[in-house]
Length: 350
Image (cartoon, rainbow, N blue to C red):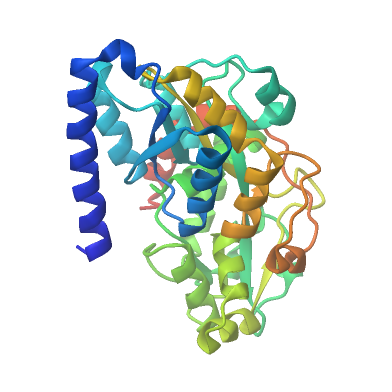
């Protein structure tokens, strides 16, 4: 375990002990404290500015625990009504849906959030809201394939691509959500036939993260990979020669521009079921929908703002250019993720 990870664990233990003592001794006073307890699965250094600016603007101090999405969900479940968490910030529709189904969120009614966050990117009942978006695109080796060879997600199942596809595990939420979207668009039977064709075209067994798939494409190990845009944008913004070379050898394809558009997913948050500082939690969510916070998501981590009209100053996103995004409701994608997992298990997408 890295020194940074050890520090996070130590901080989490100290934080939990302090909160438990404070909540036990003065539960009524805790509700009045200028404090927000944030459980976050986002591990991006650029998010530090978000938290610092929120505290500067409101005087509300943020205590933060960082861990993986599933770790945070397990922690909230085990803590139950004694949980100190005010806000849960996690990634991907499937995880937000899982948290909602486990009763880990409480609904929020906020005119500001309803006005600024598009309906397709939030839970209709207000359990969670999307605050940044990322697209799942195709990355091709320019020496092996052209954009016209893979114009759609469905084209990944074309037998002519046998031995050409690199992709991460089928159990990963990014792929679960993509397959769930395909179920919504095509119906389960056609989506299963498609996924079976994709598996037949694998260049290797799924392994690694999205950046590993992009590197494999650049190295010629495969002709096309499926990846989220912010991984590619990081490489575009890198000053390392080897990463610049990866970009030079590859190209991004926006799938399904002539039909339903490229699949989008979100990073989102909701107020924890037993939040001791509920008003502060709602205020934090509303801050994440501000122009300032939305710009940080884009400029800091190469994601797109969900609020329309926010100015983005990110050269990599600009270079990727405009695209047609799928308008499918994130909530509908989330509801289909359990079916997507069963489908992927049946076709052998491990």
